[in-house]
Image 1 (tube, rainbow, N blue to C red):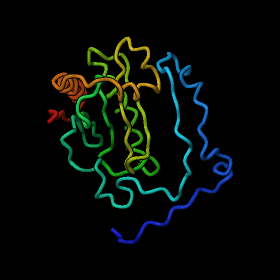
Image 2 (image 1 turned 180 degrees about the vertical axis):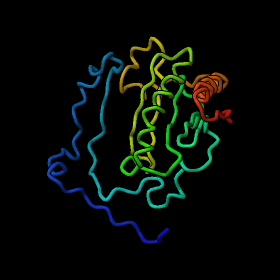
Image 3 (image 1 turned 45 degrees about the horizontal axis):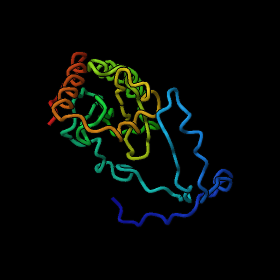
Image 4 (image 1 turned 90 degrees about the horizontal axis):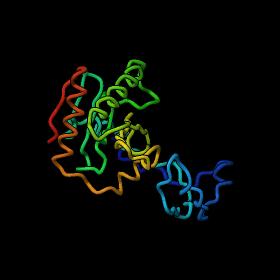
Length: 208
């Protein structure tokens, strides 16, 4: 890995960035009324900060050996030759299941070979069905943020049955506010997901 210093950052300069209301606090009054079911009483954004480029490298972007998705992990609950599912990374959550899904090869969405991309749909289907094997779960949502790691990965969020306030993109925010469920419940639910995945191939691992 090179010891060269990262390039100095400077304000981004495009038509959009010159238009953006940098430094202003934007009106967020519509947010509590948005979504399929209201769940926010009030919402306030911080002032819009100056946007600097070039952006700092993500984990594993300059040196793939530093990619945590590529390393053996005690949080792996299931894997096969191409894919890995992890859970319990932050300890017990308030949702029945949160999982990270990533290919075992160090690839980004932009450069993933077609055989990896072709396997993405089936593995998402399997994770969705495995999460719904937990008695408390009605739906499984997926998200891809693409800002923390230069390795293709998605997040799975299990929405509890009957939790209409958790419908849609608000569910990760509920997860941050819910109290943590008991550790033994989390382990049991991770085991349900792992075994359901392994029933279709691959290997389940006990959460350690």
